[in-house]
Amino acid sequence: MPGYGCPVAVTFTTAAERPDLVDAMWAMPSTWPEFMFHDPVANLFYARLVDTFGEYQLIALDGSGAIVGRVNSVPFAWSGIDDDLPVRGWDRILERAFAEHAQRIAPTAVSLLEARLTPEHQGVGLSSALLAAADANARRCGLGDLFGPVRPTGKSAEPRTPMADYVARTREDGLPADPWLRVHVRAGARVVGICPTSMTISGTLTQWREWTGLPLDRSGLVDVVGALTPLHVCVEHDYAVYVEPNVWMHHRMTIRD
Image 1 (cartoon, rainbow, N blue to C red):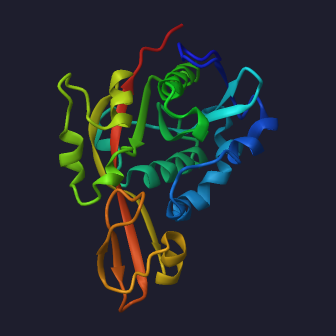
Image 2 (tube, rainbow, N blue to C red):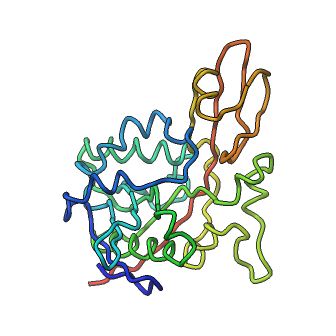
């Protein structure tokens, strides 16, 4: 697959087409905060994406054949109404995709899980190319709707701001103020709504101290670098819980012959 107008020369393949690239795809460097790697739903299903949904795992390659990005996604059966998109967002769509596959339910749509670039390829226009490739791949698979429980990139700078207020902000040109939401809207997506409990990560205070480097010695809400909302800390019961909201976006496509 070509790079779809990207200013950097890239091509796309899938994990199903290039199983030899799978290990390198998973080994891509990440800018995610450490706690994001401890979502139990992701830990249960993510390693199974290639075996079960290999054709939906896209790998971006530069001219030398080096991996510069990836798009992980899953197919699912969408009823055609917005209320069918789960409020548990990222966690639930991953669970649902595997459950429907086991039940042999035919998919009608695709949900993005992650679009990642190597750090040196961020900020050069590749993000829109990843979305364009995901659109094209969904069409190739015969599916006309692409969704995503999107993690707004600028929200971590304002963890105390309600997500609804943050998403409502626009620039003078009417596009979203958040950069990643703006990339989606420019690509033709619409904001469906907020999924308030998209990802839930819990652990003991010892675990959270390891993940964040914070003392966490008082109960209450604690701001954590990289988190979209505050961490809920309970010293009395020795645990902390992070509940992340995301934003459902919808790319409606016309399936081409």
